[in-house]
Image (cartoon, rainbow, N blue to C red; front, side, top):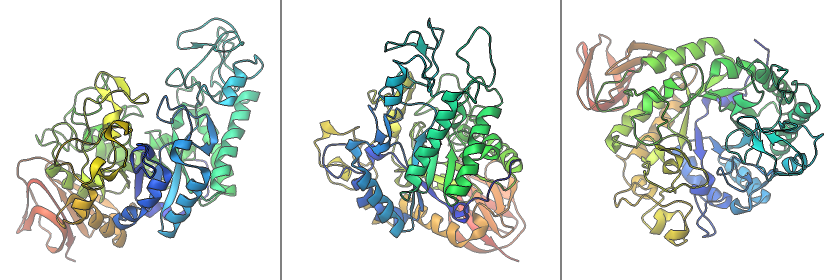
Length: 528
């Protein structure tokens, strides 16, 4: 394993919070969230207890893929504000002990980026992957004077930056080696972009499609070398900054140089089974290629935590203390927790698990109040990926209060980026702050409990006593956690005495038995 500088000490205790900037808070009444709006709502994040915010891309873009089609890496998109607004956000967040991470789209740009416009008219420019003539499968015809076609990474409007090919092929002369001029220029460009923002006070990056750089790289060896090179530079130039991977395979990404990787709905040999086996209940975003499965956090009680536990154990063993695995509640590409048949009364047990398991928790904006995935929305900036896969349902405006548009914006409803949940009983921050029994207060308490109890954090040991209903495990040898996500009562024999109940609802430890009512959860300090 390549030797890197140890991860910054702050990362081990981080609680991430993901903000989709166009949907969080609109300060100027144009219907789209912005950076000043985020700045105005920092006190909510501070009270909640999160300390690291990841912003989805906020760079100049034509927004054909909601900002993941970057036209200028060094400037904020005008709809979000200015570079000065980002600097102010970083400063105001820092005053509250909150770090800001940007989203780095490393593998492709927009067709509107000056690099691509130049490349489309210069046959000697190899910043992108071009055929000299013809249009092979998967390639898009040249929009400029240059003959041939280019390779996109995702949508046709997202041409893949050329980081080379791991393997040559005589019939495909466009396969340049990883050390050709174009790939080397792109590696340098990543360093320049990262240096620019880190020098202005940002704390790191979540890297989009981090595994996609080098093409025809089946074991990701050459892609890993790109990130290893960048990590060594980062360790010297910005030692307190971090790189988080959208990779979904910590066993590969962390040895390659990332400080942390997320369990995702895709990635690795099982195509994201670990995360989907927890949350994916067939509602919200469902890819047509996924095999049907019963998720563990389902009222039926037909699922199992085994796929997740096994994946976590495998990743942890491979990483061997050199980095971290993060467990998100959701993200901008995947269903919210509150989707399909899942109901709000099932969410407390979900957070009791997520905030006591030895992964870095990542809370998707609005999940802390139980915001709902909204089905049936129109395609918005490339949100629809399939007949049952519309990402817009996870991207609706944050619900702050009982005023029009749930306090997200003063614009008329028809001008909003996406519609607000029309349900008359949709949750809001204001209503839940006023209710000590709310989900929001529970998440606040669980984060505080995790912070003051190191054994419940990423470094504490975990002993799984029962991987079923109820899910029973012990953290740090001292703290018992019981989670029962099904609607039916469940029990498990347990002999050790409990000293104190730290948090819980519907779980009793008496005599020699743990009894957990449906959707119950409990965190206990043990005797001795």
